[in-house]
Length: 127
Image 1 (spheres, one colour):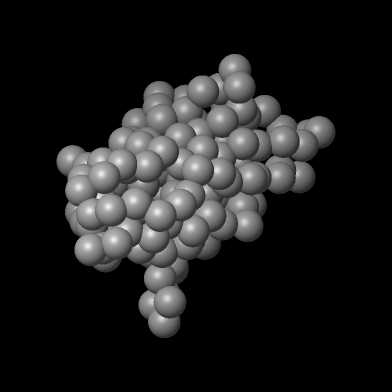
Image 2 (cartoon, rainbow, N blue to C red):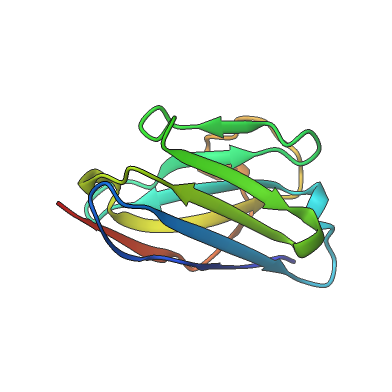
């Protein structure tokens, strides 16, 4: 079982930056063995993929809408994952969720890959 807790959300003006963090805890997992991802959901819209980072090689994957603006990273020693968000746009406004997959399936952009989810943190970008 893995518990995930996001932090770092808030209100920011368009063009600004925010850094989200996700902390993992639990008794029966090894953080470095988790594929990790960020998803977001805006009101009235479906949850969508934002970014992911693989367990071993640390390969990263991004949605086209955030590529070049967002950077995902992980710190295995701290059991944390971050999402640095720069050049924020109004359309980035959403609740952001971190997710973890202990099984190692591919298709990083698919929400069904991830067995564990955080409760979400709100990001609001004013235009």
